[in-house]
Image (cartoon, helix red, strand yellow):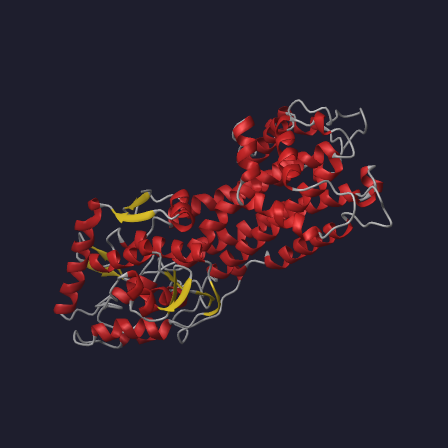
Length: 509
């Protein structure tokens, strides 16, 4: 059976996708067990010796100066979870909930959190069983970690809250009972260790960045389709002009476009039909390339974060100390996820401008709105409206969440990241961008049908054939949302990207 073995140090984005979406099981590496147990023994020593350590023998946040007895430590941890379960709104999708559990477990197995091995094993048992905690989307400030949403995750481990099991909504206790799992009883430090981290924002962002990775590749393909439909000029992608401004994304995009349109009989050279194309075609390497560079920055940050310790206090086993710091603060990810949203918003923005060029007869030389029966039929008129609406929404969503902060916990937590809001907005922007790209693919395929599809390039020909195998040529008006949804599924499931890459080789990012 496919599985991912976690040790806290080498989890990858693909591992997260496989566990979250493809049902991979999770195991703890044997190499980290001693470190986990050593860290736990130090916490027990603190409690036995009544040493004043934040969150272990004290209250939380503003209550950090309130001492807690050994006898009350279990109640303290449960009270933390139930009182912090303040999330609101719709629950996260199941893949995000599974990613959250995986990332929290991976942080804990590094052995700097002081949690019992058995508690981590319980979290993984729930994940592997298919029990999916219902975690509300809203309520995290992204500093002191994702306290509210992670508390909803832990509620299910306690036999409380709600969860989905085998497609059925149940109470946490019912879900655990059906899965044959006993609830857990937390002890000192454990509630804090389970909820004091950035795993919610990082889970949302990790799955979003994977989708963005595929969407940006697809944007090169959809742009190539439009380029050929409009007899675009390929001189603008000549390697020599990009080498004198050598941004990696720009160079990679220019190479991709030439690769996708290789052997095309529809593209042109400068001066043959026109001297220059509009920016949405001519500047594709610069526009898409900048977004790719941003995406790679975000990927680097995620690779660090998914293998980091982000709770507080952090146990340093070698020195037998607990240091209270701020690794739970989501600022490094908040900025990254805001950047991700901006980058994909621009991908959609340029795609919509190409859709407009396709449907506008004064710009394309093609029948108005790509219908052979203009007037009686509207063709792609309102498809461009929908794309424009999505792009406009993205512009609102792209306003950075990370520039805002509202103090909390009686001003003890006086700067927060809003990183979870940033990650959710980036996810929504990517969804919108994928729909805009789907509309461009539909429109460019229709435009190509007014010419000679047999002259398409090596990558665009494959794309055209996939679209036409799933969507009929537009002749008479029909409900277009069905066609958009069909192509969106092809986009979402990577059918086009995988098929093109299998034929012409990997596209660069």
